[in-house]
Image (tube, rainbow, N blue to C red; front, side, top):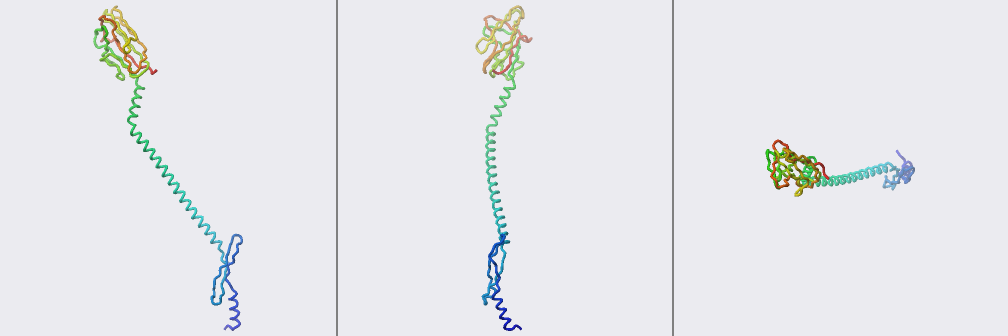
Length: 251
């Protein structure tokens, strides 16, 4: 059993005991005083020291993680927006190019193929006379109606004229043979003017072979025309008489 002196001393000790948290910082470790009343009737607060450095470190780490997550999300959103914008612009440009090609492809390809054919295929023709005897007089144009070669279709056997499809240098060849002792008097015409004269004498199946280089513009016409009032005869069928030409090069 406790006596009166013992109780008095115990009460005195309780009145002087505190749970104390001292406000101090040392080596980055901080503490603050916290009063905790333990015995309200005796008005004796209990004090203790509580180290909050651990809590401060955890709080800093939490804030760091939150900031990092927020920045990462912002950057990702920004990158997504930039990529979406760039993709949209690329799609628009591709669609514009496709629309242009769809609109102009047929015309462009047609023009390209035409130009390629004109470049790769040189116009050329070679024609003979079907009939054995061919009257030739006054201003007749000799029509070589046995067409063997006609690349590009620029020689017309119905008119006897070759029409230049493009400007450039052309090689024109010809040969006329007179029937028996008939002379043959003719000229090579460029459009409506004589370019060169030709003549086969009447010595008997005489011939007048020759060739010329002609600078022609697109649309110019070349043909063989009689140049006197005499009635003459040109032999054909056996292929001694012919008219031919081909494109050499542009100028």
